Length: 460
Image 1 (cartoon, one colour):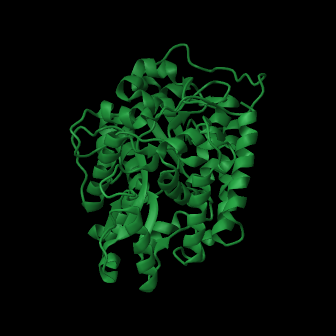
Image 2: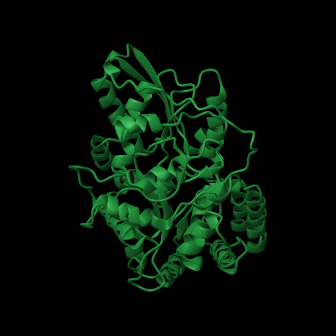
Image 3: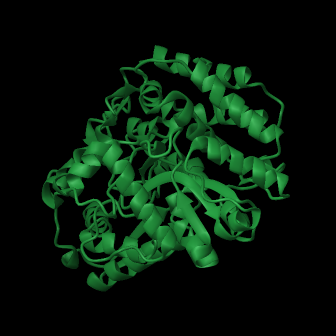
């Protein structure tokens, strides 16, 4: 699903733009995706922009999104209703798909004769880079000059959704989407289960590993995982990798600056994940459980801990109330700066064949407006920018807000590792499935990742 951080809600008194810019200062840079010099998708950027949506006539705007989790679904439904109330001449035809299904069908849908007007296209080479290369998305720079997204969002956030027209470089070029929410990957925990086994939320990485061992010894499943889609194990591996390799090494590796997947800290991270699986810290059927079923199972009592993104917070709050807690991966030393992967939510983009691009741009502007940031908080999400009037409600949302503020202060966000190549979700995600099943060694898993990585870098 996605890369560096977004705006924040929380206790820090620093200005939003400064705080977010600090988090994003990891330097996206540019990195190249494969493709020939003859790949020249035609620009369909509008010569003029019409913002008078009320006079656009009766419009059916088809929007494909992956906002299917409870809080995300409530958020987009509320925003859609408000947009239609503001513009009664516009009817939104919403098509909701899971993240996995959306990614599988995106390119085929956009290249067909009747594509949607708006889609959520994941950042990175595998999704946005490829559809931009194919000329399937509309560059938004003309609309930005009217709506001022680059004035409202820190540059780092705009860079995340920017690609060169040939699809070869991310982090620069034209703007192709705008995101509503922020994301961080952390550790959820069941407060009742922690109390039952007699431990407190861990403050150091060693304490966290000891908590996993204690949970296992007390007959509890230490860590719930659903990994049918392969990405969940990559996130779990990435969480460990951050601790073993450090944030700068991870950033350099993902963005192709230096390093190898077979470097010792990366292998050690795989060894740690394999050891956790061998010790029974993960559910044995992890590779047969769907990603979206993981928080459902966790809410039913499966697992003391669960690694996951803030996109699950609203659902867990609704089902567990104040019994669910959220923490950042604890550092090696208590009180040290935390590190974890994160990003912003999938951006809303306009398709190149959109029937109503001006109306689509107005929709994107509305669902990323200050009003939308309030709705994000109200529905239990983490907004991309500071909300003008709403504050998080409930213990877990306040913990997430505080975690975000802490990460903003310490520049503690690392990118999602599947951004490293267009195919890493398969070339490393598959081997990680085998690793946790005991059918591949850490060296084999990292070797597969490195071969894909090396081939990709050769095509720069």
